[in-house]
Length: 255
Image 1 (cartoon, rainbow, N blue to C red):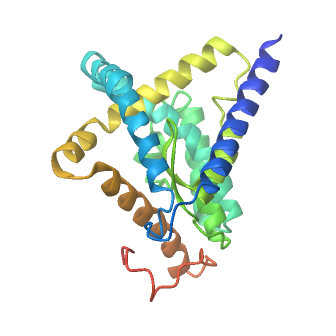
Image 2 (image 1 turned 180 degrees about the vertical axis):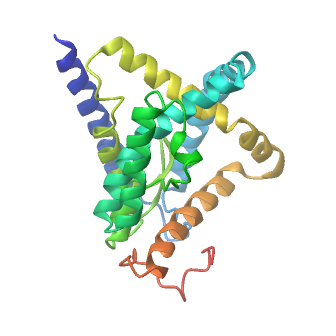
Image 3 (image 1 turned 90 degrees about the vertical axis):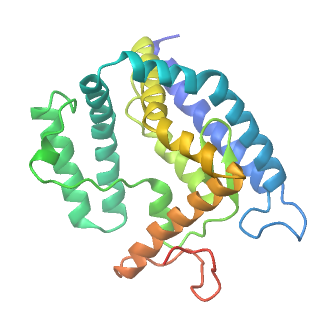
C-alpha cells in the first residue's frame, strides 16, 4: 500500500470515527432531569474521565518534559509553524462566513509567514500588524444558523457539541498535516503538535485543578459559553443568523 493510500485511509478513518462518535453520543440522551445543554452528562463524564486518565498518564508528563528541555525560542517557532497552517483554513472559513476582512487578513498572514517566515516558524505577519482570527467549521455552521446541539466530550479531542463535532470532521479532513503523503513525517508532526498544544495549556490546567470543585462542569460551562459568545459576536456584527438560542431564555450566556 502506498503512502498516498495510507494518508487517505488515515484521514478517512478519522472522519468516520468522529462521525460515528457524534452520532452515537447524540442518540444516547438521558432523562428529563438532565442539564438541558448537557443531556448526555453520564456518558460525557465517562469519556471525560478516560481523557483525564490519558492526559495524566501520557500527555501531561510528555508535555512537561517537552517544556522543560526545549528552549523557549524553539517552542515559539513550533507554535508559530502550526498556527500558520491554521491561518489558511481560518481564511477559508472567514470566506464561507462572508467575512472578507478576516479572510484577507488570514490569507495575508499565511502568505507572508510562509514566504518570509521560514514556512511560518517566524511570525513576521504579527510584527507587520496583520491580526489573526482563528476560525473553524463549527463556527461557520453556527454563523449560518446551525444550533449547537447537545454538549459532547469526544475521546481524546475533548469538549465539543453536536455542531462542533460535525465541524471537526470537516476540519480534520482538510488538515494539512493529516494530508501529508509521507507517513513518518505526518505522524511526527501530528505528535509534535499534540505535545506542543498540551504544553501551552500546562499552567491553565494546573489552575483548573486548584480552583474548580468539579472540573467537568467548569470545563463544560466554559466551553459552551465561549462558543456561544463567538456566535453572538457574529450576530452583533450583523453577519450571523443565530444558532437557535433566544437571548431572553439563555441564562448562561456571557453577554
